[in-house]
Length: 527
Image (tube, rainbow, N blue to C red):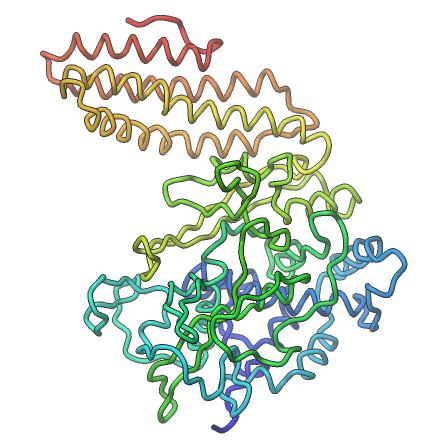
């Protein structure tokens, strides 16, 4: 196989430029002009997330070895590397752009590892791969809708409805990166033993990304150059600095540095082509390690795991859960705090970033299409904005308070609306539990839909150093209580006349429960 299509030079990464035009750029170009691009703009947000992790692997490696002015200076050689990390980050941030010469020099050192087609080391592939399953090119895409029947051309189309006929080298490169991150589950049998490789690495996470107004700032804010304990990582070891692994289904030791983590090869893969046309590819499971009690991964929400709730693992996003309902998991005050929050707190504590700014968290995920994760499903793309002050000592007082308000919203659904639904179903469905569930779920969807925008606006209006908690509390609780009551009243108004009395009784039960949740903003008793 001849060497062809080097990702250092060829345009393949999609970005949105200053004129809001989507364009393809090379790997060297993106680090030269990251400050001029607004964001990544690939086919899906999950593809963008996967490519961002690749870019971060490069950025962190260079950051650990070079100062902002381009001088080689390894962080790990300092007596106090943590202090140097923060000082260096400030210098990078103030410079407003990456040192293009340094990034080009670094990437040129590993040029041979960035050819999409290469006789020995094709980019994120295994040359002469013999293990695995052959797939048509259609399966490489992460923006397809699939049936659960045997794969054939008429079963697939892109999310926008267009059918797939061909794929460029540039697009193939993007989807290879995506595949390593979000690939559906694949069967991986090695020496007669099935290996639990599962879905791609990012498909196992509840991914969190800090948003900014340029790609340069996005990379800097998500750099996570210190671990959850505020300590340096070990020497960066991205995949292109190591000999490629070819054996499928390899359980590896948890990485001790982010570039290695961000370039894990979850799949062993090889593209097939003919006359510059991608025909398909071969794939099998690659490297994996347990996500349980993983202290390396910084960009995910976490949750307790197991019967004893001692261990923890990533908390995946759910399509039906809007971003603000994840506030308690995002800013939790214990060992489940995401690493990226610890990183931002370090920047805040050391006055490296302005505490008067607004920070926006983007939550990206993929719900797979079946119980075994063998098909693609729904994309998740949510965001949540708040004051940077939530990340300092002043803001911590508010975190418990806001978490309480989020939990009260859950109580409105699980207690007040449930009691209404249960009481009304006694008349409508003779107490059938499925009837109660249908009514409650209908009301819950409407309640969360109607308070979504209001909660986001309320949260972003809070300035922890100056806002009054009692005023903000009454403001939100009044909004929540009035919204829930209006929804229930409207539901009753649409009942048949013979159910008016039953509706009134159920409303009274609802009001009593609502009063328990919001005693300051509800009148006890029913009508």
